[in-house]
Length: 206
Image (cartoon, rainbow, N blue to C red; front, side, top):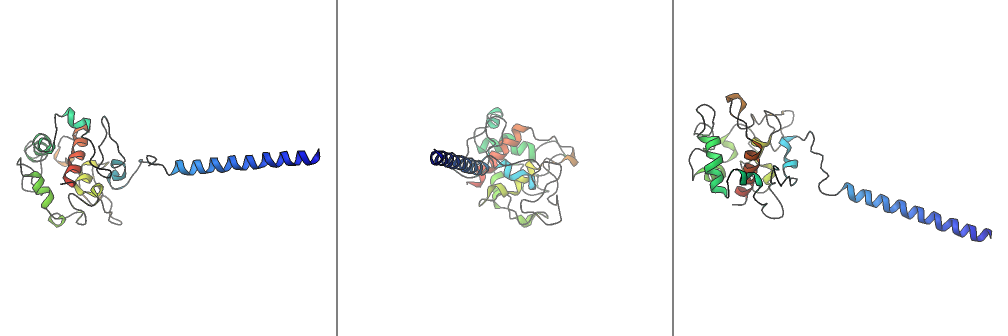
C-alpha cells in the first residue's frame, strides 16, 4: 500500500512540473509574439509604432516588409487612388501651393513640392546634405523605409522631431514637425497623415 501511494504521489508531482513547464513556455512565446510592442513614449517620432501594421480605418498603413501594404481607407476618404493623385490632391496643395507664408516647399526649402509631376523626382533625388538637420537620413530611405526623414517629419509626436538616426544628447534636432506650427499652418488630419505615410512607402518601392 505504501509503495502504491509513493508511486501515485510521484506521478502527480511529475504532472505538476510538466504543467508548469508548459505554462512557462507559453508565456515566453507570448512575450515574443508580434504586436506586443509598447508604443507609449517611443523616441524618434514613433517609427517602430508606425511600422507595426497600424492599418485599417484611421491607421497608418506601415512602410515595410512582406510586400506593399494596401492603400489605406484614409486615401479612399480623400479620393486618392494612386501616388499621382496623392501628389496632386495632397502633397502639392498641403506642402507647396497652400496659403502664402504657410507652406515651405516652394523653392525656398528643399525638396520643392509645388509642381505636379515633379514632386517624387525631387524627393527621391535630393541627398541629405541639402539640409542642415539629420544629414545621416535620406528623405526616403529605401533600405529601411521606417527611417525616412520625411516620415519623421509628419509622424513626430510633438511639435519638434528627432532624427531617424538619433543624435546623442541632441533631442529634437530634426526641427519642426510638418506642417510647421510656427507658420500657423493647419495640422494634417489623421486621414492626410495616414495617406501620406502610404505615399512615402510607395516612393520607397520605386
